[in-house]
Structure formats: C-alpha cells, structure tokens
Length: 171
Image 1 (cartoon, rainbow, N blue to C red):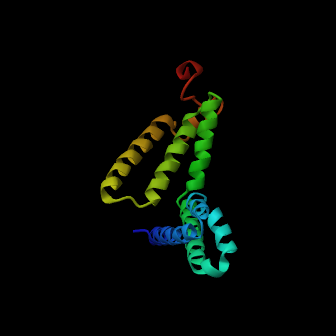
Image 2: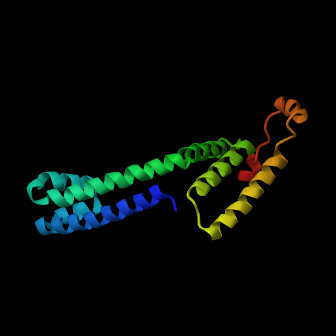
C-alpha cells in the first residue's frame, strides 16, 4: 500500500477524533458554539480555539495539527498522482463540449489522465485487472484514431482534427 496515503488517512482519522473532542467541549460552553464548530469547521473551530485558548488549547492544537497535516498530504498525493493534469484535461473537455468542438485528442487526453490517476492510487488486485483491460482498450482506440507516424502525419497536419460530436448530435 502507498505509505503517504496510509499516513494521510491516519491523520484524517486523528483530525476527526480531535474534532469530535472539540465539538463536545464547544457544546459544553454553549449550544451555539457546539453547532458552529460542528458545522463550520475548521473556521469556527479556529475562532473557538483562539477565543477560549486557556481552556481549549489541547483539543484545538491536536485538531488543527492533524487537520493541516492530513490536508497537506492529500494535496501532495493529488499532485503526485496527476490530479491537476486530470482537472485541466477535464476543463478542456468541458470547454470543448460547451463550444461544440470537442476533439478526440482532448477526450483521449482526459481518459488517459484519469487512468494515470487511478493507476497511481494503487487499486486492489480485482480492480487492477479491470484497469488493465480499460488501458488496453484506450490504447487500442488511440492507435485506431492516430495515423501511422511518418506517412500520415504530413497528410493530417493540413486538415482539422476530427470532432467527437456535432451540433446536431448534442441537441
């Protein structure tokens, strides 16, 4: 298993436990503080922790430190696994759909970015087989769409890229 993922999950569990601890303490101060910390955390938890620092220092520091660490590890994993590339590819696909000019290249880039993200997340053995089948199909489709490297590259350079849908297929 991916060690940073396991550590992030453990810190998230710790943050959840610390939040429950802080919520209980907030309800003991006032019902309004309890609901605020419960529903508006981490913002209300920060205000509550600072306002009642003398009494709530320990649960507040445990909560904030575990929450920030879990968040940082999650963002790190998202970046390393290619999450931002997936977001950008998704935006290009959405823009192509909105402008009614989605290309096969954009669609394949989105599917490949999604596959890379899933592969980096280290799925279990049963899901790994499904991912391999999907990867083979994506590669087969990419090979069918892509012309032969040398001869057809010059021929396709002058013509526009094939669109996945037309205006009539969307409406």
